[in-house]
View (cartoon, rainbow, N blue to C red):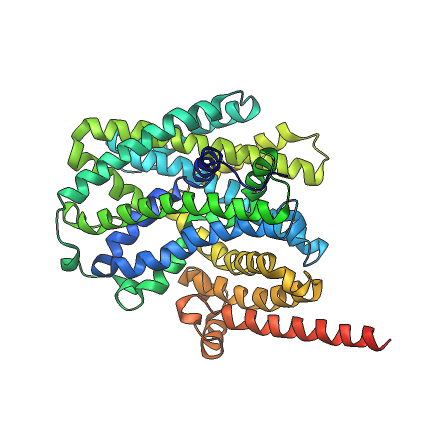
Length: 452
């Protein structure tokens, strides 16, 4: 029985995993982090790498170690109804509600808007997103070899150009990092803010949805032992994540060092466009526009395809793929026209709710052998985490919504009770308490069974 992948096979898996994860958010959030963190960029980047790189690796490994057949099977260890709830919520988040619309708006903000001289108005965005999603739907209904072609040609071209742009920006910074004052939460809690900012990549959520693809590829290459599958998954994942980490660090540093090129920007897409134009002029802006658009198109097609296949399998026994594709594409088009800033703002509360549940599920899957993947442990940890995550969601809502719903008292009460709540990590202590309760229930039940 084959136990180890060759170096060529490992590299193939690593590149594939990188391609699955690297999308719109992987560009715009680290450069904006660097812009906001300034002199504290290293601490902020350290936190960002944990959630933006480390957690996706653990998510893929969790599916292999727990021998799960996918996200639905893993999350259903909490309970069947919860499994469907969490799977649907996760796919909708990395799909038509946030990640797919973000692909269109990043393409518009980074590429089309600067070239057209558009100010991000509703009409130019609507026209661009209409064309973008028409292409997405066409490729999703009849994908052929477009994903392979785009993945092997356009994404490498994009990364080459990005590398050249990063090298130019790093070699000729507009200012020194130390001279850039940290802004807002990065001034006093750069690590914690970077940790939370890593949520926005959505890669840890995506790892639970796409991890089974990696596992199946490894098994298809002849590795069958669960232990060997998990080991080879981690090996390939580490290589992929090292590449991701290097790119994230470079982009974050460029965001900090390029602060002298602009007064203020509301998102990383604007910063990236300004940097490209500053160092390469119109030619650089044109190349960046094309490569970012096609890279985001590839990601959007992959997400529509993945979400449609998953929902058709869960609810209509695989007979309604085309209907799901049309529905998800239309919904993504409508949400994209809210604009990049609005999508990011609405995504944050949802991610603050889902990420604690995803993190605990990943850790339970990884270490489940220590408690035989007992449902009591899964259920207890999830229940405690869920309660705390609701308060994290409330805290992340726009202030107007908190006031309108009279939730200010709940935020203050949670802040006085939950450690780390102000840093956005109020779920950690409840999750640990849930683990203790779950293990106690398991121990009590086993003791009763042994006496019987």
